[in-house]
Image (cartoon, rainbow, N blue to C red; front, top):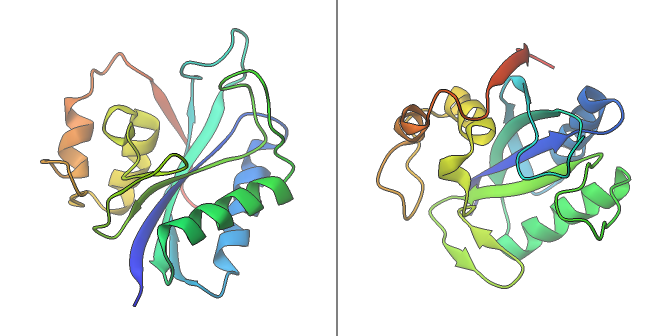
Length: 168
């Protein structure tokens, strides 16, 4: 049985749009994934990153996933490695690609390696806006408001976004 899953994609090194496209395409070719949809791409300022970090390109994809949370985490980590992401000793250092699992159906998962829904999903405009573009009325497990209302609660001054690409 498959569940609808959401994954945030971000890149702030190299050809950022191409990095997002490669990550999306890697996900789309997986046998356990079907019906992939991609939100528009936004540019955002880095949050909690080292000084001088380049702006991010961010988006969200959602899809039907036929697997468990641990398998999805393994898949996203393999895609990051395939696209050239390397481990950095510096927290939130600039990166070629970042894939964060946002949700997996109505599942709640809390392990040392993975927390679903993503613990900061409700406070990150660069995640909520593209997610709201795809599924404004989505209710995430453990949260009391749909995505569009979580987005409306954020301060307009926080994390300004620039919509760059409607389809990519």
